[in-house]
Length: 564
Image (cartoon, rainbow, N blue to C red; front, side, top):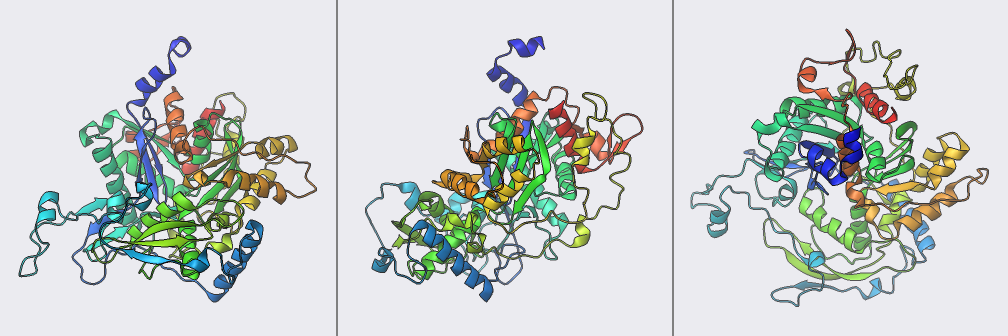
């Protein structure tokens, strides 16, 4: 304790954070960095593997888009509902800006834009090992055989910028908040891809060699969508495959609280493909308040494309965000640059690019309209028609071991009595099925979550302590929109008249990661940490002759530490 009284915070972070790696996996991106860093490396969570199979490659595993006629009707109705709120023309009416539609191809030299980030094209990835030679020499010999050797694996944004004509298959191991397991993408392959991606980040970005891994520990900040089986697989990856000496698991909601220096709040995490809502009281998650919504930033991008095509503002391009991930990079940049929530017509002139089969990108000037509608899909999810993909087989979530044996009377310590029981008892004991998603709007999800907290004093505190995190949290105008719509969603019978979204202390994209770093640095006792040799022996031993292998218990250990 004397050390804690005298140590400078920066010194504490430097000393205890230099050998602590924080890993926050998501569906679209993974954030990995040392706890002493201000921000982590944020890379697309995908891998491209070279294939020798003939036929069309470069396909996103387990993904297809199917829009039914009813979904189309619902989408148009949702647009018109949103249009009336934003005071813009309905879908079948002409926008004053859109009616002067202009689409022009730009060839050769053109005047530089004032915002180069918005207007710069993404280059195709060089898929050959010798980059300098690949730029200077032709791709094939007279016999049609490649002169150079293809890179076996390509990671992150580079993987997304591979031309569809190249012999690569892109894998996304996590999709919609779960392992992307399907008949075409086995659980083993998913785990192998996760190992490869994370190992690449550790080697290439953090420069942590395999021989040095045993000197490092890992903090896993897992999304609230993950199930027990998935968390266990991640622990195996970290401890067995990546060779960390020890690891601990924290949920994103809990980590977010510490990332912003709070103890009680309603955490709204809006990622690329899923959004979650959960309430935290005094550093302990309230699982009965958890809501999982099957939409996120990627769906907003696709809604943006749908609207522009409807108004014929989009050039005649073969834009396909699933077959060509580079198109998703372009749409995501347009969304981040131009989409916002405010009344009135939100329109702009922008440059979009066509990426065709490895040819240089071609710029097209066009007018984009109704840019305030796509982010409103958070409140009216019928605007966002998600892609459909095969769900993991039901048996994949089953665990034939008796995970809950001897846990109900377990004394977690830290205060005596049945201190740990409420934490453990609050977890839903249902590892057989994925967590249930709800197709409701963000305002209804937040309201329902907070009202599930029980006590009126806690509800009032939570309504005044809403935290928006994740990449979508950066959307301009979202804070006021959430406050207004949540207030209107509260039933009139509830004695609550104040809704407030608290400002984030840092980039909302990295709050959960930063909270994991703080939790890892301040956890001096490390009683909840799992050591590599213990996990490799197929269990965690706590006390005498007791073995616990369930990830629900692992999470409960973390909450127990925070609450002690």
